[in-house]
Image (cartoon, one colour):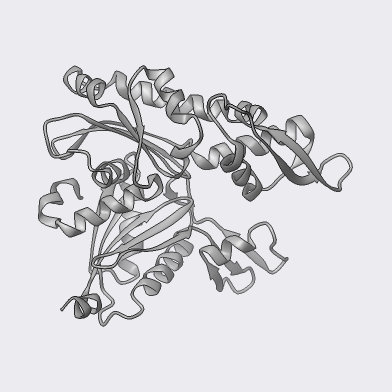
Length: 339
């Protein structure tokens, strides 16, 4: 029966992120984790690569090819390309299924407008979904982490993805107060690009900026400080160039986006009812999301808020899709958190 159930499973959980798309299939686990990038031919608009293959082309395109990130800052910027990407991913995970009309739970930023939510729902419906349910990203992250969101206890999550930082306080299966700010991993990458241009007249691409952020980026002092080579194009001499930069410099570049995230956390706390604020003081806040593992960010949040802060101990990047999975595994129990 377990073998047969894999062919009849119609439930899919999607974390449709600006940087990465993760998909959970009921009974199989997380089966896909790919960059949210599409490559297509400019003249014919034909899609030639999706996900990891498309990311390899990014920054190396010829005059006939363009790479597109169809989601920008947590929302759909290109509807047609988004549908093509979702269709490709669903076909990939449903390749051996007898039925092709799944029930889908897809996460969206808590600050999404009605138009943005409708765009996500429509995209999923048009690629063949039988039913589409939406769940806010911080709620999904909290469920994935294992916080008691259904109880009369305050739980606080800071989910830092590629396009948005989702900050929310939850209780009784609902979000009490939240803030969705469009400052996250991509903003950190842009800050590094701008900083390298201003200080060294060196132009680097988003992939290099992301690599440097992951390698030596930090929000607090490191002991010892680290360094790494940065490759780009010298804007004065117009030739390729390699520089050595250290973590102090990258920390300076990241100071502004980190400060904006901390300010968003403080604003959310200011709007939190005192009873729930007391719960958070006792239980602390939890960091999730791919950018949530930036070195020293947890310590910087503790310094900026004086509240206990923890990083999702399982895997910060998969917290949201794990939440979608738990919803699908016990649909009736979590129906209240869907819309």
